[in-house]
Image (tube, rainbow over all chains, first blue to last red; front, side, top):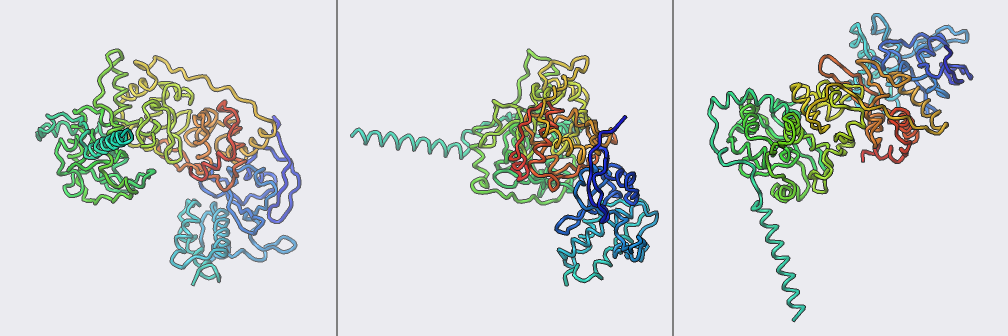
Length: 181
Length: 430
């Protein structure tokens, strides 16, 4: 059986992918895993509920958005800029990691995860939240609720919520400009 | 001289009309459906026996869904109804003496249920479906009264309605009642079976289906000429549930009775207010009552021996370009859960190939679901449908109109006549 395919062009982790033949029914997660060998975004529920599969979409105006790749077709991302968890840390010219992203660093410092399966999703969600806070800082009193509203949809199965939560709160409080005085 | 006579006749007519209106306002023309013998109180023994049956009658009449606010005390009211005239809150009907119906007599309860007039002559708003409950038998009203009086009293104050003038004056409901209130108890139709008659009683009186499924006139009374032919409610279509309407959605009497019990079928999952109806009411109805309800809606004297679902609609051809782009949108945003061929996922996601929303003449419910999503819902028997995401930020009006047209053409057999303006209307909440 041959799957009908279409040409797909997009940018993933700053790399341009040009006119690749991709089955028209393929979900983005399978495309990342099988075509680009980017296995960081995880297959969890396969139904768009657990958010372990989420990646960042970078819009032209610089704003970031979360997208669930297990229920969204690869071709939906045509022409878009996507960042997977592999693209969060700073790398040198050879591709070696030279510095974690602030969110990743905070997760490490708080020992935020155990098995780590949900971590790419949390790293994505927290990165998008930091971007939103940078654009629209919240009052200190609203910070906890803002974190909950943003990350509540991410499911963790080994009770890591508290440490994720504290890592994100610490980062928000210690990054200038995210929380109104 | 002639002009003077005409003037006097005119003044006379206006005077008579004014007197008549005053009479209506004073309630002189209100006809009670409650018989005189109801003034006789029920004995403690009668109350005890009746309360048991009343539990079932109250479930079939779905009293709880409206008289309990979300996370509120049971039977203590506070559920909000957004109407074109303002917000009305359901009242405390627990037997609390201060805020509930603890001091209500049997006759007062009957008058509230069947005439829409509460204790002390206070008119109820027709958000309380007394227009339908008027057709209840006195025995069933007694049973509900006895059941409610056996509940735990809830000392919860009633919320104040927020209605515009003149609707905040309850006495104006005398006009509404004058125009809209039917005669009274339904007389059994001897030409039809016991099942059909029971079904009619369930549909018209207890379950008050017409309150949502019958279009309303300017005064918000039911348009009897369009009985059960569907009505838009809070932005969603409560569809046509006449036999023609039900067949169009893909139901036959058997499928419908199972759908009312489980909330799920190949035609989709109950959502919105109908989910609450299944959750609080119809899932607890006896199989006989569900069969009767279904038989009546299909205008049959009993359920047929076998289920024979109506033939699926014939797909309609759509322009190549539309099919290409809309199918692309479907594969990218919908097929991950609903399947490439609209087959859904058993116990998780409804199929679309057989979905009732795609077969309705109006695209409203389909468009509403895609724009706003549907929350996860637990159905009877451990069934659960996952939440559906909202796509209002992902799809513009044109994209969604194209998607709706393609899906409706392929699976619903409907002409691709959805316009971006139609989508915009639902988006704006009109």
